[in-house]
Image (cartoon, rainbow, N blue to C red):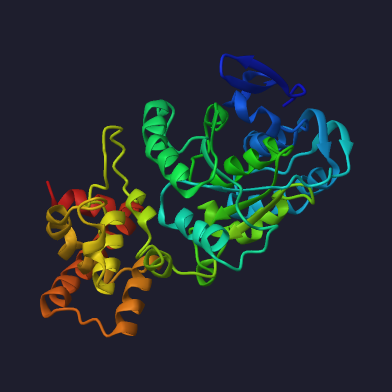
Length: 392
């Protein structure tokens, strides 16, 4: 796989950085013209963006233009070793570049992704609102990247989600950069959850002339870090290998649980912009209050005695109460890390589950066990034949 050196094209009020890629569409990233001075002149973002695809296809990668020498070294060493551990279908390849150069001096900008979720608000709390933030770590920019989270045809959804975030950023007092890209087209055989860190790591390197550090909001607490194909779970191991002394990517908030991050929103006026919902309707104006992420967040706030502060601007009570019992039944028996945190928080504050909660959890456990047995049986040819014979 061979790429050209990145080039820039100015179209109206947007500027694109484009690299031709052999055998497929050019790879491009776009930002508003006003943010063009942040764009770097190296090809590190191209290499990061295409590495997993090249490994999946077993094709060596030659990057046009100049790459940072230390990043290239890491790409040919531990970075590929780590990726192959979590994705056995990836092959070791050779990465090369037209030219290499030592890292440039780091730019002063400090950025964080801003989705309106609990994790991104926790990063704001630590690196913007806290009084004791070191100047070199204090946020100067907020980012939102379209690199595949919204699907192949998700442009309308992305722009709808960015509109309230831009208002929130203005209220917070930080510039809000939207970074568009066709990077998702270059991942036809690798899902977003399996590659999200690699995708988002392209952006600070793209903006290397103005951004020297990215606080990458962690979705996983330290006790839950493990080798897993859900790549965010290994961020604390992965992001140092995607960094240079010019562009540092750090995993932010790994020392906090989701419960702690949620409770940090209490009393903050900006929390009315909180968006944890999985509903992908671009017309949605607040959280659905019915999906598992909404219900989990609302239950945490209810247990803390602060749910009323988030109603009705952020959540609605009626759908929450319609789904609350079913969520609790699952949470009491689930192995999910977030559900375990809910149980631990309940024990810590003396929250008492009702007899009905516990009874429903017994049923939920039995159903989960039955589903697990059916899945195991479906993988066994003899068991499948017996099941078909019994149900004729």
